[in-house]
Length: 480
Ligand SMILES: [Zn+2]
Image (cartoon, rainbow, N blue to C red; front, side, top):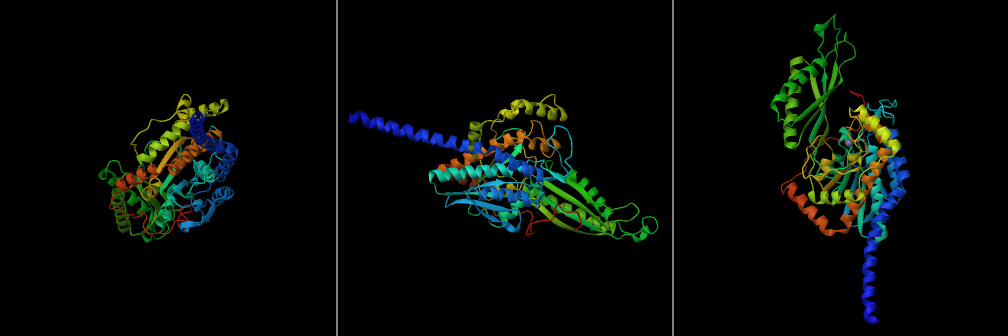
């Protein structure tokens, strides 16, 4: 009997341990699902608050409260930014970070309806950062539950990172050493499909150029005036000519944020806000220096004076194929977003407003094929994090397929159950990936080796925005 019993016992043990591990994974996913309503209402509240960069007081406090009530230790006001914080659980190595954003965009207020209708607010969540912050917090909480249930050593941190949209919040957090002991960082971004391919982002430098002239009556004494707006226009003209003589993939954009108040008064103040981007930070630095020269020349030629304030500066995104493949595996396990009948009606209206016949729901429910390379379009301050630690991200379908970021359609869908469903895909995929990193020492070793190789042995971190303090007032009115 003994002979038979032993193998049976062993078999039972093996079967027991594997179903145990299985159960744990499904338990983690269930624990996220069980809080779906609570996460949806947190995201909805941040969506309604729609606080802009460095002004995300209530959004940041809400996420802090959520994490604190789950046993995370909170450190707020980090890196000299009142709305930045770190929530930490556990101790020792490995230290895994999950990034969360929560800033809204100016001028994109929109109700959760499938036609353009402002909610009358100053800003809107047109990049879905209300979902970003909430899902990342959900993933951090689920990972904490797994650490706790398995008695594992390790630290899970949620990084509350403000002002992604132009404020470069994460750059100050990297610069002040907050990622020094972190071993991997996870992030995600709302999108119109589910994609765990290698991400790419453009390095970016931005600044506000301020011209100062002399006011005068524009008809009575124009010779006494020197127009600050002339300075801005002359600068823009030079930069627009320069476009022919920069690498083709460079991007330069500007908005005139102050151009005078009345045509009959020569403006003594004018301001233009510039971005320069390219997929190599060295090219960005060079182009930006030429933009500064154009500004100096414009001031000289128009008899005005000019000063400028660096606003943002971010690195390109450093890929990590090792972690990215793991993320893709997990996204495959979770799957995409399936719409209810009501959501389909909403989605079709949104799709029509974008020039499509109807919404392509297979894009929302399916996955994009894994690609090891992608074309960068925007910029993100995650770039600087990716040069500090191995970093991995995904995007999930929180918006109706075909919806571009920074559109009213993105704000609208993000304020409905469509956005909440997409956010849950992200929360689960991030949690599974974080747990994999805690579980698999070799995975982290391999990811770290890849990171070191890609970054290069001579890498030295030089923030593109220099030594400036966080531009806490960059969303305020010009000239303040
Ligand atoms: Zn964004």
